[in-house]
Image 1: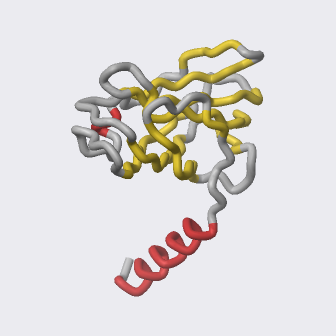
Image 2 (image 1 turned 90 degrees about the vertical axis):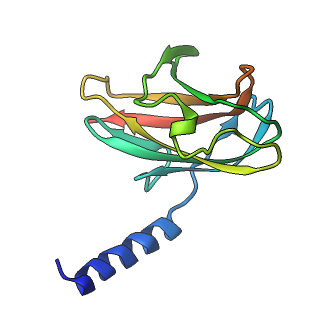
Image 3 (image 1 turned 90 degrees about the horizontal axis):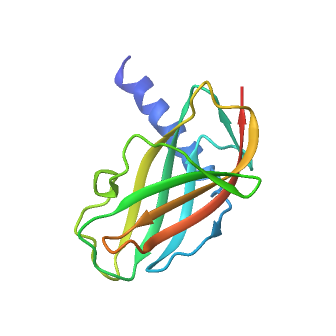
Length: 150
């Protein structure tokens, strides 16, 4: 691929990202932080349709109200009010775009992948995503409806 073609692809990718609508979410108890924006790619409409066998880029921008040496992500799929653990490849927030130690009054971009396994059922559910500090308090906690599809 020549430089010109690569430049056009990058340009259109950037345009698509800037035209993307932020994901609607509910705060579910961000104790020591505040969520600014949530982005899931690709998610052209809401609720996000998550296709089996694909992975989705998740980016949560948040402001921390505390200092923390570590951070740990915990994800659940909430079905009929029951939280079911939803494994993610990297639980360590310090390996997911966040430079640790986390500083008070700083903005951070938590960036990770959400794999959707082929064996998951086709279902509507709510994803609950927490990022906890080193005392176990939520730097952020968000809930967003999704639909797993074939």
